[in-house]
Image (cartoon, rainbow, N blue to C red; front, top):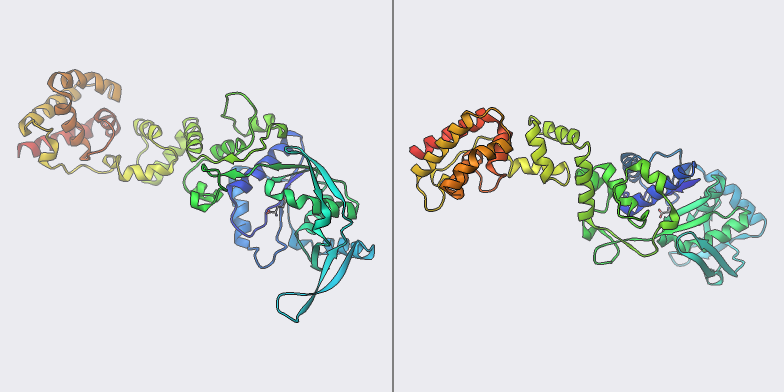
Length: 428
Ligand code: GLU
């Protein structure tokens, strides 16, 4: 039984998403359950919109939970435990000066028995803490207002959590939680603290390094399959050279014993690579969808050409505005732009007419056939002199794919029409 226990005080970051994934994989691997627990005891900072963002992100990744609850709905449960601790003398109410001078408020402090707490972290090995320095820490503001440590411990106990898998920034919280577990007579779960995600410069990954919010990646057009695969390998590796593991395989292979201790460096180029790989496999449908959303007919050569050039389907809109604008727009070519370097307008017109003649008699019309038909002529008369006006006549752009790819995308009739227009311009 595992849980992902985010506080809805901010959007879901990739670090949190990875913790959720590790918990999910571990539970599925062992036929256990995965709980989503919203830790909203901090009423001021917890927001519904953040909870929605977390839920949206996990659903997008396909991390289905077996159970979901909010701590704010469980005040009575915590109260019962708090009362018991106070009744047994394991915690006490203390009137203390807080914030404004002179104002006194009651809090509930845990009577810390002190001593050394040792636990065997599944990733980091044995960890010991001298708990005396934690003093009698505060566990609730009142019986109705438990704080983080108390709520975590009660919930882990009541939900029968057997494995607590979370970021290593929680290591320092563990001794307090163990002391509380012992005080309420709960069984200690196994702990696995996973390494932090670092920026390429090995500093803590943050917004200044680019997107860190999971839904940001969704908006940028990354595929959830790619994200899952990439996140799984951030701090864990099944060994071997292979890297492409869809979810079912991750579930089969997942093993906390193979998680690394050191920080995991986030590498956006690697994520893009995963995304390209997943786009190759069954990404065609996604590219078609993206094209149709742009009002463009998704022909086979267009899909194939785009697939070679995009990291995410999000790049499609950008390409259609840029290098692939020829798909939607007929070019308006200026005469001088159609002419290659030292050659003349009549040379260009002559070459375009020769190409049009070849194209006109072609049966099979794809980039390979076009290359085969036009290339010998280009070699003979100069590549630049022939291919520049050819490409420019079709696209009207300084930058675009090669003319064979372009012609195959726009099709024979359109290619002939554009060549005709260009010849007219050149002869004018
Ligand atoms: N609610 C804590 C957080 O968002 C996580 C608690 C836990 O995993 O034990 O950081």
